[in-house]
Amino acid sequence: MFDLYVVTDKGLSKGRTDAETARLAYEGGADAVQLRMKNADGAEMLAQAREIAAIAAEMDRFFFVDDRVDVAIASGADGVHLGQSDIPVEVARELMGTDAIIGVSVQTVEQAIRAQENGADYLGVGSIFTTSTKPDAVQAIGLGPVFEIRQAVDIPVVAIGGINRGNIQDVIRAGADSAAVVSAVVAQDDPRAAAHELRDLILKVRPHVPVD
Image 1 (cartoon, rainbow, N blue to C red):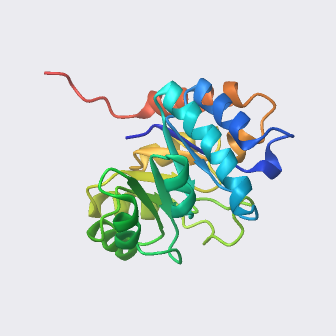
Image 2 (cartoon, rainbow, N blue to C red):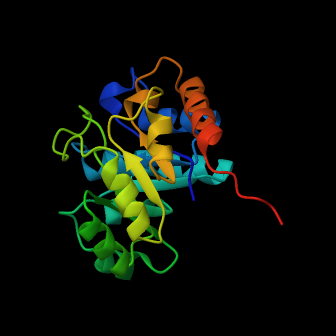
Image 3 (cartoon, rainbow, N blue to C red):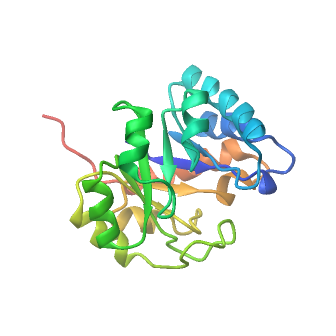
């Protein structure tokens, strides 16, 4: 589904809006962008979401909203990403319809299996390494759970948390289908170049599927 997944953080983006960062990330090769605005009001978040949705449609990429099902629906996003304390996947599905793509954050095999059974389309597994961009997340669960969860479910696994150019290949080797990054793209002087480098690093270690 994805190779590189970029999560926005305006506080790290050197004055760029989330929509400006999203465009640069897409131009660099990101397959998906998630709008994360934890402290924004609904109107501000919706304005940015609509901008990013238009950019994603123009570039034929994926766009997700963090937590806010209402903003995802109103902006025309491809879907929403939910945490363990957000509304249940099945309720989000009722609100968003069968075409929406719903991701769920998990840390354990049990959570992963439950999310899949409830209708999640992909899983965000982490935080793999220590991260300062989401201090409320469970920190540094390591690469082991990536492998274990990959073996236990049939839906895509996106590793997240403290991932950068130095360790992004490790998470792919551990079984992640893709990698989500925040500061490794958003906080860089040239997010386009950073995204391009990270995607290249992923593709270099992704298992090749023979063509019949």
